[in-house]
Image 1: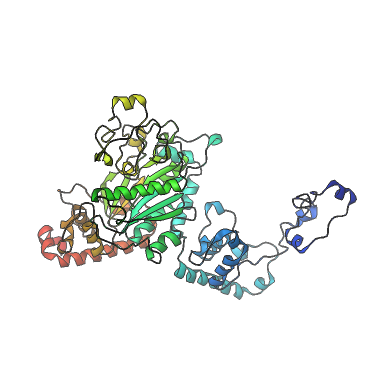
Image 2 (image 1 turned 120 degrees about the horizontal axis):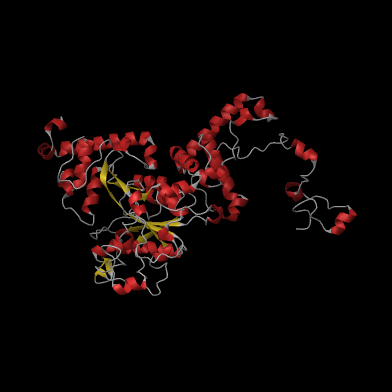
Length: 560
């Protein structure tokens, strides 16, 4: 500073008075300042008086090596050998988008000139202007390089999903409209706080990788921290191999290397070791979820951040997450006493595929402000609730907000300080259903449940064999006799009417009949078609294998 670093007048008075300035070194040729006030510079700024040919490589491995050994790497970009190309640097993200004809992200709008080479005004590079064949060859080479790289390293960009993100960005530039839609208030424009951070957590196990992709597409770059816990045993204490926690597995690569949840999301993967944690069956899921809260705390969660704990096949909708980050949510205000802090999502449930949708809804994907989360909020003066197992495990006992928000002792209500919420309370905690804003958004699709999304019957049966309510001898039973949900699956795929005995019923019309928000992953028509065909083939094989059962259970005409 003081030697022409910031401007041409950034010199000591003595130097300026003398009128003799330093000679320029090689470094100054690259970094020296320019007198932008000169009219001659202003006049020719719009002309192309030079060109920069950046990242003109034909081999992505050489390109990766450049970024792994450059000054950028020295600044902490780390190992780039396994990550999708677009995640390594903003310039490479732009390269991939250009090669695959994918729109820029909202935060990148204006970086790329529309129309390409043909829309250049003024001078063009001679090598390109006089060799149109080169342009075509270079474009094809670039596209091929990106495709080959994605085959080996995957991609963090899904074109069909990104278009949905862009449309949401355009349609809700005024967040107030979105807040109002879901019954929230909007902050005044001059008093809008920074977006809240969202901490997510889930147990993972034998969930199909497809479910992670669906969840990640919906929440891409909206979670600030995402924690996943995997156990090395089933709920029945049978040993199981880690599908995600072990390095080198497909699951580990998907969660930790691919940046599937977005470059802005920090993903944490931890393990639950049954040999070190001798918990009873009924408590094992509870203890695994408690590990999520521990990871949140280590990651710097504060009282102002928001926590969400769900199963990985459950997710808030993208629009609803946007409101939780940016709207004035009454449950998130500093005055919240934690009596009913849970902001629930009204979840549309899909059974096995996009066209099998239940008419019933549930609210398990709820959000709670950090000030009301056990281990994050201030416990001073707050009671510790009794619970149904040994008074300290499981759901809350009666008299501690188990049934409704007023089910507390007179002393607790009078004091106005209610218990902090554990990981179990995220799943089982009650909600203030009397609030008008909840009634208003009940029929909105503010969350989704992707149930039984398996492409393999043996894996689907295995799920029910190792569930909290395990079914024995699943390999010898027809799918529809294992659980009512599986009977619904078979009936939906084969277009057989519901049974009156079912608690859950199917929504007529399937995917096309959905009113309101739809899962982002399902906008891909090719995926929906492939999924439906796969389910049909799977169920046909099932019905042939267990033909006597289905002939007795269903209408013979339908089977024909």
